[in-house]
Image 1: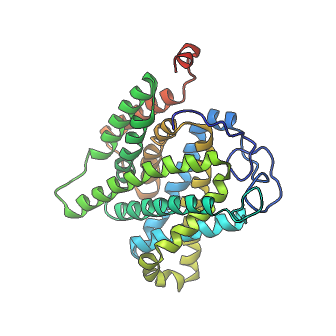
Image 2: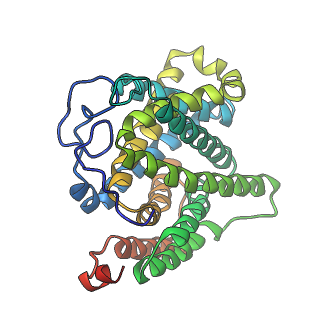
Length: 327
């Protein structure tokens, strides 16, 4: 996964087209999104935008925990995001010959199960521990993925700096003697495991050329798979149109928009680099938690921010041509 894909940037329903074609079956008529070169160049800014959107949405979701269980809010977020994506893409999985593409749907289904599990575990975590802490602990998954798939001294040093920074952000102030906090930490780690699989599978889907269409179907599958455990608790939200509108906003901001941005970035960059760039998300969540939830960082967390920033700078620095020839 550490090498660049040979899939042309202009292919259809994926994340790197150059012109919006007619809406229809998955294929060469897909969305007009930044080309791979621009997506790679602006990847840190895209990830920051994704993080701000995702964690502002998560901060809003915390307010819904007062009327519905965390698992119900997490499922509602996936459902709302999936509906938004399906309405946008309006794509039926089809092969170039026009037959129904069961292979694409199967890949999307597996991706959806992982995506849904990641969301549910994360919402269990932020119901028990601070948003920034949960995201930082969750980032252990992408760090492991970067270590397994990355090559070169920049990636290795970036992994070390990111891991050290995330450790400072997360472990400072975590009271593991509190059973509720300990459970939250466990769910954050589990969410991180699913996050690593999300990146690995998501990039495979992105380079296949149907990234956004597959994402739409993945979210729909996730909503169906986790319906039995998520839907029963959403009664109070469905009964109040204001709360329902709030949930739709959470789905748009925390699922549809950031996951679509992920597909753009995943198509342009190797999995190891994507995993390192995701270290921007703990930083973003810390800042969003400060602004929206009054969760004030301490000195260790600020030090962690600086280390993560250095890791991202290394991960996105241009390669030396001699280093490239050695690979």
